[in-house]
Image (cartoon, rainbow over the protein chains, first blue to last red):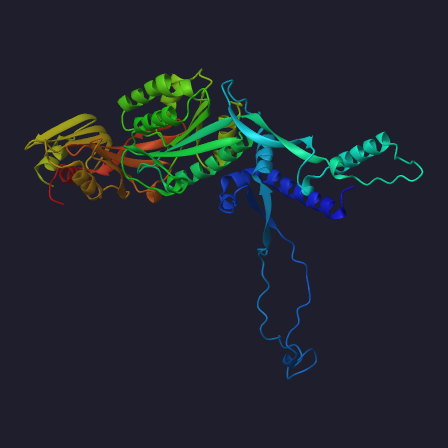
Length: 362
Length: 145
């Protein structure tokens, strides 16, 4: 039977989950939660009720009916009453697995079916066996006394009227482990972002929020996840996560440069028969020329799509709207299940965009 | 107004493509309507002549050359390797999702006004005075500022 405190904790967790579920759209469109991210959890800001309590002043300051005040005189130091709610709150921790579960429920996301390809294996130790030798910390009491009872009965020393068993060294039994190879689905995510001059701060923030939720979901679906970041303007390069979200370039947009790098990374590091590969590209769609767009579509068709589970293209909008690329890619791969496109006009569209990207269960 | 701008002003008599040339420099304006003071245009194209400026020089010069427009323009992209630069209305000056956009390769500069729509962007005509148009053409084609 669970202890009261465990029930209270469970109840508290349910309240937190309910809160996240209720405000999911809000959490998805602001980065507050991501800023408080640990390795396996995020912190959710929750409002707190401040319970009234007595506050004691200094004794020498006088009290009611003391001092020189006259009738009706205002007590010094009293300001106007506030008309805004107080800002009290604390952060509740939610694990990334719980967050992924909430995300899946709210967006009705199907569980990802890894490709039917060769899977990586990992070795796990499982305590499934019994051994006659081992450390005391692994002693199996029940099996030890069973052995002692058997020996006692076999030796004719067992007296049901005086059931005393003293295990000898030979009776000792210990838990032992077996190493087991388990299949493990592995995934590689390649995030590609256009950092040309036309991509502003807000557009990058949208990408940052969106990638957090995509990461959370894919981590819940794959035991082993590798993430690579590619930025590009007229030229592409691989960068770390921090640089990915902060860098600002002023060059023009040549999307084919990024596709070339993605293709190279996949070929060098992620054989398609061993990895589930996801490419998420974000741009404002202002590719420099229509001839480069043609090159991009050709590269996608011939080199990138045959290797990937999913190619997702998100077109973020700025004050200047967005470009033509989404129409070009949408038109070329309209019936291709591996390609998903999504228009992201603002932060409020992040939720529907994630549903677009991950709703196919690929 | 110098000779190119002056010639353009004299050629603005009605709707249609108006093209004037002077000293190896060309201005081409797609005119919607024109009156004594102002002109409503779809696009303006200025050719400063071969080797007039590098892409970087043109990009640095453009926001100043287009200062007669009702919005402040800023350089958005400069891509010498791709051979061009883009200048647009400053983000804080964009109203109703309409903005000016000028593209240059150093020699040829094209100016138009765009409106962002759900499906992309569409070109919208804009109005300037004849005097501003003439000066703008002069500055973009390399006249001293």
